[in-house]
Length: 299
Length: 246
Image 1 (cartoon, chains in turn cyan, red):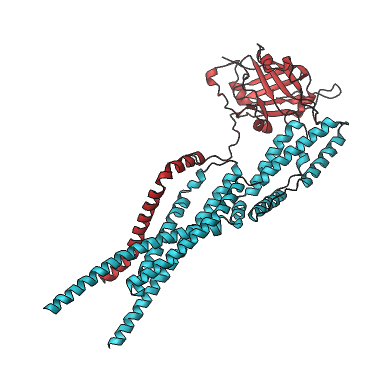
Image 2 (image 1 turned 120 degrees about the vertical axis):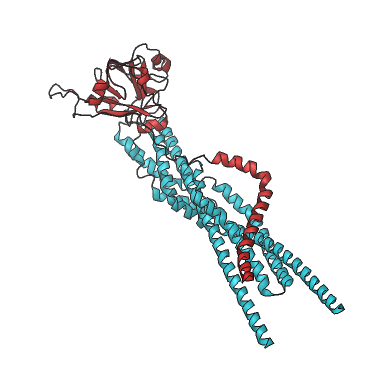
């Protein structure tokens, strides 16, 4: 009788301990999923968003250079029309491939923390040569006043070219990128330590490895869901098309950039889904081996 | 079996519950900032997809035109009279047009075509004279009047693009303004160069004229880089035909 009572008490204690450990495991598993999501977002920011290649890729795929060149041509035409000079003078002066090269050089200079110095001499020389050739064909129009106007006009066109080369808001983006490095270091350190700690506690709490792996699988699956839902909704609804930024070419680039970032997060989500499958299968394998070993040892 | 099914269901239910709980916690965490974030988003987004490239619109619908190649009048050569046939317009061009029938153009809309066969001029006329409009045609000052209102019509254009042919215009040439509600003809009475700051060249002066006058103006001289942009070429033309707006 007393032995029965003892056995029942032991069972109750074991069951209570088991429930507590399950509850704690669920909590830790949830915490692990949140930490994994945070870690993933930090990694996407550092290794995708703030990378030079991401910017250059978005610029290419949104036809930014072509549109920027068209805008530049419109602006220099507007500046030229009232002067009386023919638009044909500008034909060989501003070229799309040169604009693209200068824009890429500007972005690279910023990313590598070098000052960007635009080479104005080439454009100035070409413009001056075109205008002088045109004026030579007219009746002699000379004078200091005319030289002054020509220089003012050339300076105006150079300002328009500079505006076309410099990607809007890139300076602010680089400042944010610089500030983010500290956040990234601290964030990553915290997330990695938390992940290690939680996994160790889960292993200790559950005793059996396959049970711990079960909770880790819940976390990775939850991370996959949390990371995947927002980009999927964004890409399906295409609400990024309602963005209205100025200038128009910049709007196209930002839209493309947002789509690329959503794609990167989706890839992370898919990675977690695959990891979850691996963990689940590993857990099953371990459990199967344990059962096999138990059966062998019994009989 | 039931136990196995529960285990499998747990792989769906638990992550889903974690996701709901996670988003709830994130929502609670950012709640204080949601108002500011949504105000910023309202500024940066539109209710529908914006029309990124809004082309300049037109309400001008030309009729059938038969144009004949022309040259400046030369006693030695045979003069070919300009003929512009607009069959639909001929039916719809009475001596009077009701104001209720008029479709007033919005800013930036093309509403007419201005032509002069003697100088090979044929340009679209837009309502408004912003720099964007002057890149694609000639623009009417919005403080002036539409053809048919018995008041001044002020139209400007760049001298090295659409109004470049004005350098050849002479008194007696016929300017035709083809609108959606009628065709108007004006005979050039005066071609003069004035300084932009002259009183006679002021808008007030032009708009105070009490009869229908078509006034074209552009920078002067043509085809050179002027040292200063003070001078304007003015072309004044009196109405000779076209419906009155009642």
